[in-house]
Image 1 (cartoon, rainbow, N blue to C red):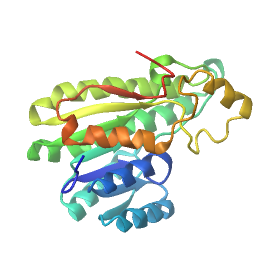
Image 2 (tube, rainbow, N blue to C red; image 1 turned 120 degrees about the horizontal axis):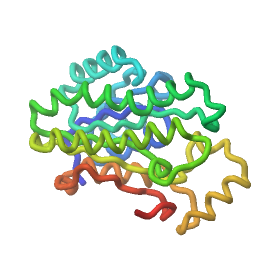
Image 3 (cartoon, helix red, strand yellow; image 1 turned 135 degrees about the vertical axis):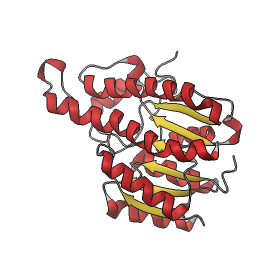
Amino acid sequence: MDLRGRVALVTGASQGIGRACALVLAEAGADVTLASRNIEKLQGVAKEVEGLGRKALVVGLDVANLESVKVGVSRALESLGKIDILVNNAGTTGDNLVMRMKPEDWTLVTRTNLDGAFHCIRAVLPGMVRQRYGRIINITSVVAQAGNPGQANYIASKAGLIGLTKAVASEVGSRNITANAVAPGFVATAMTASLTESVRQRILSLVPLGRMGTDRDVAYAVRFLASEEAAYITGHVLNVNGGMYMA
């Protein structure tokens, strides 16, 4: 999976799955634009990428803000020349039961998780179409397929991301651009660190492999979909969930 000569843009790259994706893509030879609202953390990831011998560009970017995305993508194109790989990883949660969920919590989550991916895809597509090459990889979730109480906003946004993936795949496939999604299961990240031990054990009982996933488990799937080995795969959802959901 040789990505030398390729340039990636990873959103939500300051920690967790986004950071792992950036590092794994760099290990395969890609230069990386690191995008997030947390510039300080991004600087640390940039040093890790550069330590692998690859170029790293830090871009402060709020995916929910269209103008912020336009400026960030423009900076990436000016500095690194192109964007071959887009990893839409930035996301947030705002859990509550539907009856108790505030409209603003619904909007915050869907704007970040779904609208944000749309903004980024729309910003990078002109360049990908011109160069007749692109890999778009959206990070969705096992709950987008299996459901989960108390996460209606998150699930709706991540399920919408699957639909967006398939729509984009059908629209731009003729330009040698693929669009796929990776659906992580129960992964050890900052987002899951706050779970109680009883909840953790209950979830693990649903995982045939009997362990939590790692951020690199997800990143390896992203690297595969970004590679030439996956050139004939598009509109696909790759489950990385230890068997938690099978379909």
